[in-house]
Image (cartoon, rainbow, N blue to C red; front, side, top):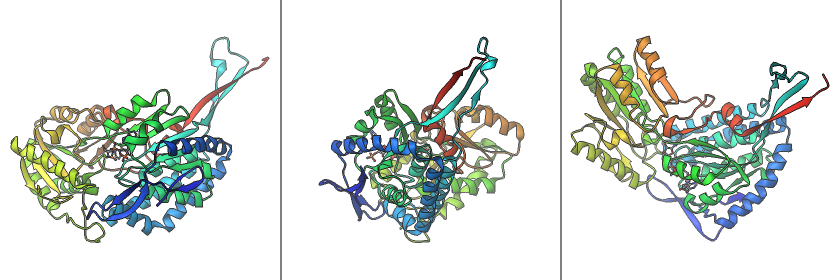
Length: 472
Ligand code: NAP
């Protein structure tokens, strides 16, 4: 495919091959954007920002609504594209497409809802006779940088709210998975988006990222990706608005009163989706000493049946990781834990880019599979004695994206809600759960700012204050 900037689909001499994570075959190729392309896209986006700001909310609603319908009409094509470039199973890709339709629909609705409020100036001393209100205005040019793991829906979570709020957007999709974002751009243009309202530059973050993030014409950066790249972007951004949706190593706490069959089902469902490459994937399973053995017995068969293989095969539950080197990294981390005294309960084998769904028990908090973000199809099980210890283990991390607890005890559930430092807290489910309308985002080094169209649209605006100084 070609990339899109300044109202045109453009090519470049230098190309990037998009490879199937499953068998390494070339799925397509895209241009490798350079700094000239960034400048071209920026000049156009500045014009686009003026056009978008002048577009009535109802027109922005209609464009986004039409885009949602077009994605739905092309849903099987989008699903196959996601599977081909990202490697998740077709079932998971179809689900991602249905979520993208939701995200764009929710964004369309926000285009009609952005508003300010009146300010009660007469409540301030000496301010009688003043009348004021706030106005929400678009930021202007928004740069949207997205990761590989949800190549459609996470782009929609940025582009939908940005356009709803009347901005122009420059998308920089992950180099591994640019095709879904390019197709989304196509859909938005078909839906009637002004030509300068969007650009989608395919190119290496390491080459064009700095230029995109430093540019003073950009008023807002919305980034989803790893902690380290996020930190670099924060340093580069200077004085502009930034949203950071970063990584995690999400814990789930299993209290002694939990229904173990339900827990095992939930851990198997929330630890291995997209081969564990989900930012809120269940990674650390903190299990009460009292039910530790019974829980492992319940979990093992539910994980062992997760079939791996070609993601285009309808029977496959868990596909490959994005690259073989990532599967090798996961293998190394598991081996390192085992060398330190941990035990593989099931899995623990690798074939190329496929790492078998794995449970590792007797994991201690000093091990890398506990401390860092694993981002692979492995859950690490650790014992605890009391709710105090469970909460302290859950919080023993730089991250704070999502967490879960299984218990029927209200006191424990409320302590979890108050004391666990995470943005999304699930009671009686694993951390990996999201409805696209909810406010979503992390605490601590998992980032700041919220996604979910209602919340993201607010973050894509600036607030102005207007005050009339009336003669009483
Ligand atoms: P990544 O390596 O950080 O890349 C994310 C994006 O940043 C890509 O588009 C990448 O481009 C770009 N990039 C790289 N270097 C850059 C630079 N110097 N300046 C500007 N952009 C740059 O992350 P990933 O491996 O694609 O995704 C996995 C990570 O995303 C995990 O940590 C996961 O937890 C996180 N994630 C978080 C959420 C959330 O909502 N909190 C959701 C999904 C994923 P290239 O591809 O060209 O390098």
